[in-house]
Length: 297
Image (cartoon, rainbow, N blue to C red; front, side, top):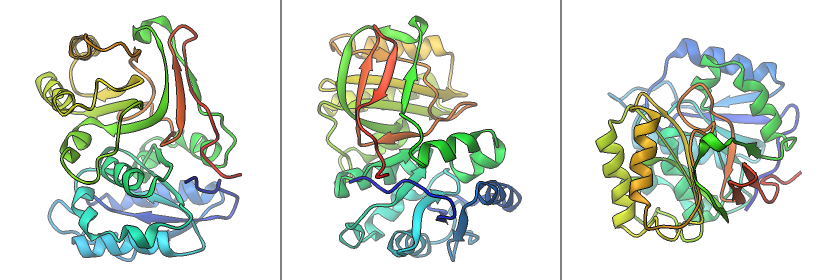
């Protein structure tokens, strides 16, 4: 199910499903969205703190449910990642969310929510900057407005140096943060990856831990049936060459195309990309392309 494209003056709900955030950067990010012409609805409990969490499960889940239930809200934007959104999954009433979806934007820890919404509701969601990222990188604002207003075709070109293994593949784009994905295995919130184009990214993980996480997906039977594999940004992990070598060794018995270094995830590039829509990955043409518009115009 696809959400409606953003229009000038739309109301955006701001939620904190994970960790607490810096209030000054919250104000900076909020001003950026207001300068783009949007109205904001902060959650009632977003400034709560409970150790490393932005409030209790009940408080964070209430804000999230309220954001999706309010008819005049057009998009739900995560304020930051960190940790905590997986603890909300048992608190969410998915049947009550089953109507027309809204734009849901976030990355990192929000991967838990992306995958749960796709598994339970078949929603199209958007992997991209949290509010804190907009505050840190105001240059992301133009991509925010263009992508979510339906004025972007969601096509990315790449060069030969990005190709780890040539090939073509088509399938629904799924994925997000590798650590979060691995921790959802064995739960009812992990989506079916058979025939999917999988995108993975991560931050501050040693090479052996990335290997362990990816191998966990492989041992669970989630890799062999992929149509393609896209590696995004891996910030403060190890060298790009080490990650590429590890991935290629892990998928040496598979035949799908593999590309690396695309502008998604932690790092200086974090483009908005829709999850849950069909994509084509063609390494000979150097193109990752959405095959249909993820938004209702």
